[in-house]
Image 1 (cartoon, one colour):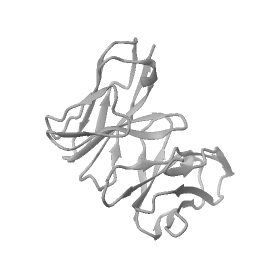
Image 2 (cartoon, chains in turn red, brown):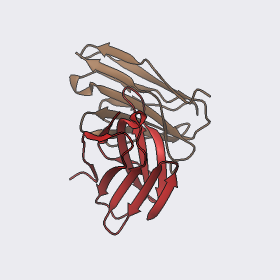
Image 3 (tube, helix red, strand yellow):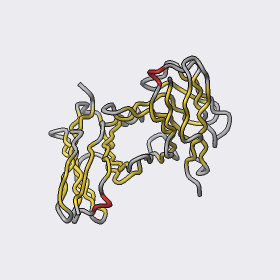
Length: 111
Length: 112
């Protein structure tokens, strides 16, 4: 079992919909959680960075961490075709700063 | 700022050849790392460095060497290329090890 799991998708939704992307993790020592967006033939770019549990909002994006269920979510409001990309979640511990990555979920926003 | 620059963008090698993938950052970041990305596998850490002169192995180091003689540069060397090393390679950097990483746009490597 991988330490960070993601459904690979693709997830296809109509423009304007609310998108929910999710990851689960197995290591209860993970404290830092990130979401990256990766366009085709590009490197990942950081979207959200959170520490421990709770919510963090940035524009149309909300990251949510539930440590009791080891569940990480990214919500995208008013989705746009430009949001079509692969979304990667990643985590690491206080004692070891090596990022552990999910395999990514491919998101398609249909105009 | 250029950020993280990787060269070349594409490369085709024959089995047994050696080559160096270049990575340079202009953000004065201490931490640099190399990943490979394969379909369905996510990003896997090959080697990393917490500062000039310091390197360490990640999850999949076999067949690769690194060095960090300057803060800016972190080249990745393939010693004797194998078809299993066909992948997309990403270099990343961050100010410190516990900070979010900035990525280059990758090198697409095919080993025949």
